[in-house]
Image (cartoon, rainbow, N blue to C red; front, side, top):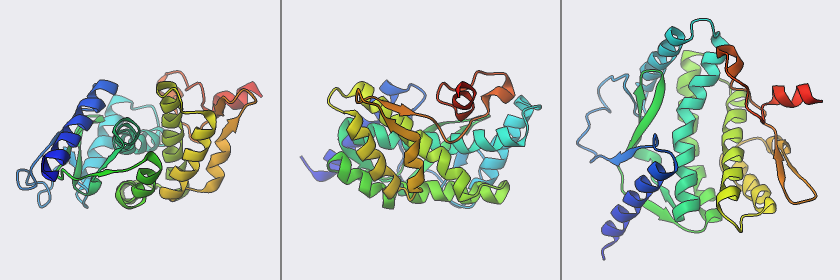
Length: 249
């Protein structure tokens, strides 16, 4: 079997697993020359270039129309979460489910009104290795994409690194807890050690690791450092929201 066939099979396996874990996480491969998005302004896609600002603005405007009373803080938090959730989930599913990491250099996400749902890869390259090795590789393949989104959002509405980092760390730590629930031999200590690797690879502040606490029974307590402000649209706050934790103290 050729290496190209192996890469194609791995990419297909990743797409299938993503849909199995989250049906909305629906991806496909597109040949590089089959989409003419790199040179055309298109607010239906996050393309990985400066045109992403138009997509972010369209996303923000849709949220404002849907939740006119929510306020700017909610729109900022929601947009940033929407920009990041798919690539981070994809990386986790691929790393921990297949021991592979896709090439995010030609990665595109689709805007569907007030949501980011659906994605394409225009590279079939898949990197293989242990989870620890692949986490280290996210420094070159995932971290630049997340930083690109932050810069584009910052050009539309203020999104400084400290603010953005808290949301990214919360997504990562929350996913590590989900890995523990799905992988029987993934221990509480594994969560802590892998969290350290992710923080280092993604260039996040070490202080964010303090949101994870090890209990005597080897369970991990996690309190988010960011808030999605769900209460601004009359939804319940997350169980690990810092507001909920503060009210319990």
